[in-house]
Image 1 (cartoon, helix red, strand yellow):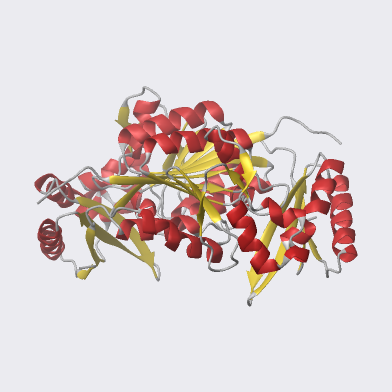
Image 2: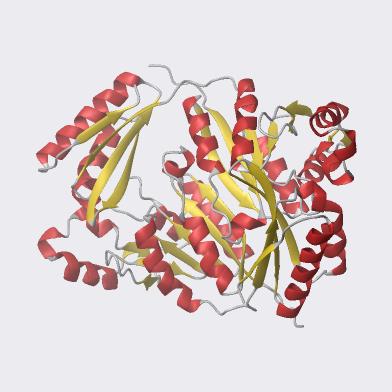
Length: 252
Length: 252
């Protein structure tokens, strides 16, 4: 069993529309799932408003704290799209028209449709590296360990697949889950003992409620497959000993 | 037109299952919508792991920064439910068995089913006030301006309706939206001018993509209904002048 220093990431969702409840965020779970498959631990996700000083402060903190940072939102053409400018300030760089991005947009839209508004999307911090956008072509950008992507989920997903090519995979985390119709309270004592017995896995307990009936999902996660398998088997034994009906799923 | 100091809130989602991508959060948008209807501005939402020092630090910061703080998750009966203990530490209070909560659980589960695990859910910071739970009875709790609720959406929603009874409504924010099949880039210049002309409303621009066709929703929000209506009408004129087909929705 090898345990190395985990590779970490933070997610920043920029957008008043999420904080007003108008839009349901679906970017966090998508980014988190993809990173998790690469063995990268998402430590935090923060939804912040389109306010320059808040973006700057959050980006500076995440940049120092995590190996990789992914932001979504605020890179469109309108007056409320202030992410690129804030990113430039966060890194003390000039905001400039990225010529490579301009060229891509020329090709996509033709010169006559390249209005001022659209050109705003090519303004990026000096030295930024483009992130391809297979959906609408207009690129996102990377600056140091921060990947700046669009907020529209379909567009973000396309960009993310390119952004993730840079990630050095961590030790892959394997997981399995067991669910049954016992309550969390029934399982609590036994689970605490199993967690103490198996310190190199993380045992999570999640109550569920389907068709008016409560039950519990136990998720076991870790870098070492053998330990995860052993713990899952112990959780099943615990459930059976309490009169439960365990059903098991693993991702390995 | 009166503009008073806005009433603010922060949301803290506690749970490894959201950060691993296993579970899609739906609590943020629900809480945000409810607060928005009460005229409370949600300034930030943070998803953090079940790690004691992270919970303590986040709660202390939010407690100072916002008028109201809502947390979800980590108040169940198992070893990974550490929110109550972290809240007690954040406020320098003892963690104690809340006798009022114990009494509610006695009534609900009967004495013989009140196992140690289940009793864990009655451990709260000294002086905490209960938040009713109409779904599973086991209460959440309030400590100062922080409302600590369950993570299961159905249960959280029940608790939230009680928690929100404490909220002093702010000036209600009214909003309207106009959408059309023009792109954000087409609208960008005109919108910037309209935002400058109407400083007491907030104009948000949100691209959408339906059935393979792009369009833009413009959302106008503010405390003054007349200004919101005037701005919406100007946005419609802008769209028509650009060859667009505006469709309008308002919440007033």
